[in-house]
Length: 337
Image (cartoon, rainbow, N blue to C red; front, top):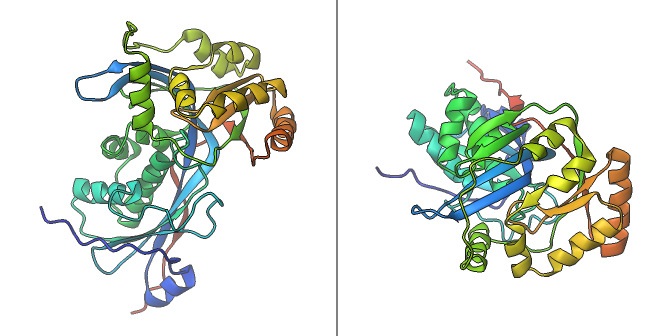
């Protein structure tokens, strides 16, 4: 099937006023980043993927996607100037490989709608940081375009489309907390009684998820590793109850050794954060972002200050669970007769 043409654009999208003047609608959707509170990884499978058993926790660090109506079937993509400082417009990927473009194209193919969109990304989740920022972008793009095009898919149907884009996309759609099996896309929601509070230390660099998995496989080459079949029940209970002491004892990430092998300074940052009072520090997903567990919100704020002073970084305080992808703004343009 012939693909509709793709136009990419580094410039700021039209304002609501501009769109109103020419009769174009826009929708803004928001989706959360995540922490893998626990991540067990099996050996590589025949399809090249790895079986995992993970506990996802969505946190209140969100990506926004504005999808705006076009009069043709083309896509444009741009980076919002409201993005976090680490999002460099000169290096931001604007080609068809961008998950935002892929999400819009997959939704269009799935529904058969014939429409385009201007897509503007507001980045807040660290890029290539192990927090699922790209997956959040895809989830928000699916929700935004679904509303813009009025295709009427429910969350379960959007998750089917999202799973084609990446294993973490369905979780970004649902949010909250969940056990993830398979490649992470088989979700069992967890109902948490209370929030947990974390301090995130983003790195000034990213790590390629495939490279981290490949490094893990090399480090394990002579080990007898079995595919995980479920997560540790003690970790689940600790997260559900927000029992920080128990959670600190039970969190784990099999990817951590590979991330540290690729970026040894990660180990120094973890040791420093724990020395400054964090209950526990872990690599988030494939890294290199590090998540430090705090006792409560006040402790998280104190810990952030200490880490910033000690390491000269811009740490972030977050909490989870956070809501999944949802429309946060719907601008319906005036249409004259």
